[in-house]
Amino acid sequence: MSIRLLERHVGRRIGTGTIITARTLSSEKLQSGKKVQTESPVTAIEDSWKERIKSYVTDDPSDRFTLKQMLKVHTYDQKDPKEWILIYRDVSATRISGAFSIICPIIVSVVAIMIYDGMVHEGKKERLSATQRLISDSEELGVLVIVPCLLVGGVATVLLRVNYLRPLRIYQCYKNPGEYVVVTPRVGSFHRQIEFKRSEGEKTLTREFISSDDTQRAGLNNLWSELLHGNASFAGRKFLMDPDCWRSAKLKNFMFNF
Image 1 (cartoon, rainbow, N blue to C red):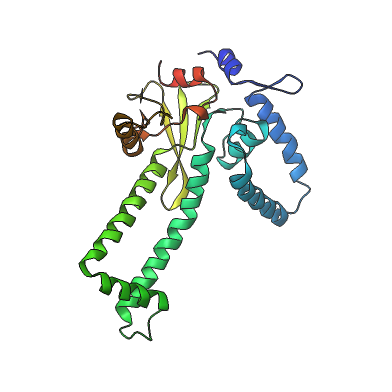
Image 2: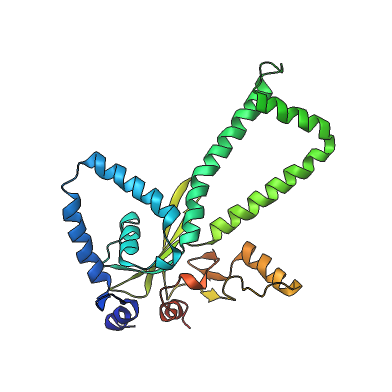
């Protein structure tokens, strides 16, 4: 795929008919950078975090490839718009990943404190009320306490697995269209970037995401298969792709050698 052809696929028309490409993103980024220079560093950082949190909650997934949104993710991922084109963006997966990155450490910390409290303090009065209540409920249930533990563990495992499988963003190199970077969730940190090439490794794309008619037994089996094993394979691992998150079908087909 030539650079000119790639630019034609990636370009988007807005209001006046201007084509938004990687070069346009770069120029807009420079213009916005001049405006930010007049602000103090502390104010800029505070505004950046406020804007990031607000965008996590309020951004419309259908606006994933608008100029403003692309400038945000290029800056956040530290990708030069002159060199990298955003071809896939899953807004829902990004929100879930951000929530997991905040909630998981909190849950682990709370559980660790309760375990420490229950093992160190033997008296009921010395323990935290939540710890003592949990111990009392466990003693009442006896052996059956394993049932809620298995349910909670199973749900948590499925949620973590789905979060792991869903890619957040995919970038394609502007100068070398066969080179890509996929941004994925990572336990213990927000994101991880994996580089891969179109010519290296096997790339597969099965049935794309979960269809609306998956109500029969075969459909449910496919649903569980996708949730646990994904529906695509590239960059040396499995992924769960959403067809609505691609910038264009031609860019997707080119990556998977269709």
